[in-house]
Image (cartoon, rainbow, N blue to C red):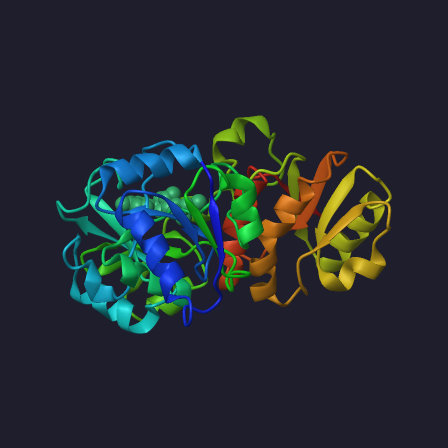
Length: 346
Ligand code: AMP
Ligand code: MG
């Protein structure tokens, strides 16, 4: 398939191109578009055919449900059973990087929800995503625009790498502002369960409703070192070289990394301020300053992809992020990329 490429940072002045991509989606085709979290692989959310095409293009098991994207919170009405809490969350966080799981209505095929009777609803803030969904006039089902198992794409080049030739169009809207997938909260009555941490933190959600954190979010928090192989099914964003997360006091971890950095087969996802302190023999991937979690969130997936372009690397190290605030989202992605391999440094 020939993939058309468009460059649209701001929908103003690009109405015709957006209408063209909206037509592709409305008629059952697939298109990649930018959002503030990561790039999405979009298809018409009311179409079983489009859902199947998305799973095929991604190489994703069809029991892993898709998120439906709406232009405004109330646009979810024909597709999901909304509630007072949904609208309270919407008033605070939509449009934005929050996905809410609600009971689905019959308008959404089971092919989209992986057979579940619930549906994930998100209203993205990115102006190109919003203009596109508005032009489609229906919700757009979109998982992250990566091949299954690869890190989510945070710029168009990543999506092109994974999906060129598999989709009808890709809109390049520049680098994603957040860089990690949306926070997912499941509503049960007036309580919420955090299923996936993201830029909307558990503390922020707690201001609206009671929130508990699903155990899977922080699983293996207390673990020290674990063999890689049994954790394979948890290995989501796995780089080719196995990733080990280092947990310990900053100076002890730095000393350990200084030692390891003498090995040219080692890659390190390091803090910016560590660059001059580590040996040039290792390959260094700076992900931002230690205290600058938003930059780390923005750069993490690109760094994991970059590491994969160095076939000589046999081991990767990164710091174990702090499991609170935005750190919890980084922690959650890192433990998956590392298949829960955490090494305690004393
Ligand atoms: P992605 O689109 O790649 O960000 O992945 C979407 C994720 O949303 C899936 O992996 C699921 O974990 C989650 N999800 C989507 N729909 C549901 C649902 N109905 N119930 C629980 N989780 C969901
Ligand atoms: Mg994904």
